[in-house]
Length: 242
Length: 255
Image (tube, rainbow over all chains, first blue to last red; front, side, top):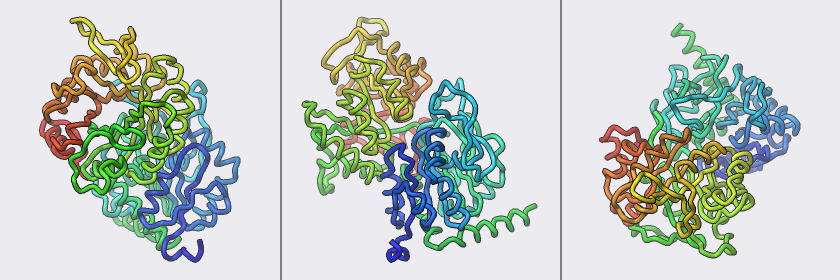
C-alpha cells in the first residue's frame, strides 16, 4: 500500500461490524482514494485518512469501537493530524455522549469518543416525521465558508439524510460548519482542525456528496498538515471578525 | 426544507430489468444498475428495485444486484419483493441495500417488522402495502403475494400497526389504480399519511405531471413512486420535479 500512497492515499474505513461499508468505499475510491475497509487498529492508526461510516446504533458502535482498540487507534490517527471524517453515526460518536441505546427501552447516555464537546439527542416531534429521511439542505455557517470539506459546495445544497439522532446539546458553535433545520436546527457538518463530520451521507448524496468526498480525499492527499493549516487560517478569520 | 422525493421503480426478474426503457443509448438496457445510474444523473432521489422473480429458489441474482448497487450507485436504493423471512432481509442488507421492503411476510407474521427494525434500524425497513378498495366507502384491504391473494386486513389500520412495530416508511400501492394512469388513489394515500408518523411513498396510477403533485398536495405523501412513465420516457425526472416545484412543492433540483 505504501508504494501506492502517492497515487491514491490509503483511507481506513473503520469496520465495526454493524453493516455493509461498500458504498462508503465506493465513494472514496471514486474520489481518488484507496479505501481500506478494516477492523484492525494498526491499519487505522497508520492510515493517511480515516473514515467512520454510519451504520448501527450509538451504543453498539461504541461498544465495538472501544473494546476492539479502534478508539485508541482513531485518537492516534487524529493526534497525528491525518484527516478524519465521521459520517452520520460516525459524526455522533465524535461527541462526548449519546442516548441511542441498543435496547430502546433503556434510558441514559453512553460515552462517545469525546473528541468534540456535546451530546447527541433524539429528534422528537409531533408535527414532523422521524426518522429524518431524505434530501435536505445544509446552511453553511460563516465558519463553514472556510471549511475545506465544503469547498465547491453551495449553501442550500441538498444532501441525503437518514437518522433519528443529532449532535445537539453543548455543541460548540466554533465546531459547526453547517446546520440543517428539521425539528431542531442541528449541526449537519462539524469541523475542528483535521476532524470533520457529516450528519448526512456523502456517499449517498449524488453529485453534491461526491464533491464532499473529493474535498476530503484532496485533504488526505495533501498530508497531515493540510487540514490543520486550514483550521489555523479559519481561526485567524474568526479572530479578525471578532 | 426536507424535499419531497421522486422515486423510479425498476421491476427486476432474475437480476434483469423487465419493463422497457426509453434510454436508447444504454450499453445494456436490461442492466438495473446502468438504468439506476441514469436515473441518478436525471435527478432521482432514490431507486426501488422490485424483485418479481416468480420462483423463490432463484434469489442469488437479487443478492448480486444489491451488492453491485452498493458498489456502484451514489444514491440510496431499496430492494423489495421476495422478502420471505428475516434471513432473506438480512442477506439483502448485508449485501449493502439501504432499505428492504417487505409485504406479504409482514402480513403473515407482523413480528418480522419488529425484528427487522431491531436488526437493521427502522430507517432500513419499508413495509409495502398493496391496497384495494372494498365497497363504496373509503375502505381498503391488503393483498398478499404481489396482489394475487386478498386478506381482510384493513390497509389503514395495518399501516398504523406497521409504524408502531418499527417500520421506517410505508410504500403504499393502490391496486385499483396501478397501471391505469388515472392518478394515485388520493383518499387512500391521505388516509394512511394522516395516521402514521413515518414517511409514506405513494404508488400506483401516475399518468400525468399533475398526478405527481396531487400525491403530495392532496394525498399528503412524502414521496411519489412511478415506473412506466419513466421507463417509457413519458416524462423525465427533471420534468416531474420542475412541475412539482411550480406547484410549490420542495424538491431537490441541484443535481
